[in-house]
Image 1: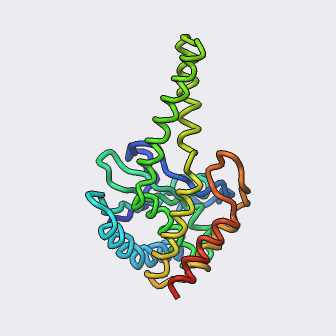
Image 2: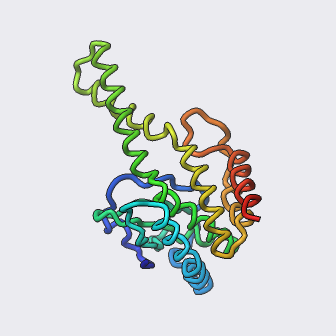
Length: 231
């Protein structure tokens, strides 16, 4: 595990697309976490990261479980956290300073960290990329069957198909990450239900077709069920 506070996070040249950022939320003006926020971040990561790595190693095969945890201190970045991988396939969890400033307690930070780590443990990034590829192939094939041989039309069909494919199971992935995060948070000694309140402050997306995030009511039930099962 490695923790970085870096304004040049983009220079890491991350591979692939990021998995399920949690925003949008308001931008906070500060570009550097203050001392208290840094101390909170280091404290929570120190408690949660061993649990994340242990669960990752116990439940996956040949998956890199050495997480790189990054705080992007670039100015004017919106509140956000996401999971991705670097060019070597190492899992990266990134937080912006604005998100750390929006966190209200250790439980919320633990839950967000567990949620983003869960996307890697469950292989959601790879599944999303496969779904996007399948969607692109299906839509370009349909365009060809419809008689469009124009390269621009085929490219547009592939782009649209990739977007639809990438979102096909995104709500299921978010709920799975919520459930795993509730378990991680609890094992690490934090209150998962209290921690999940961070997500419930985000405007409810409702049950939208091809929406990237599930309705808050579904997320509430997912977390409640795990918390109840662990008592």
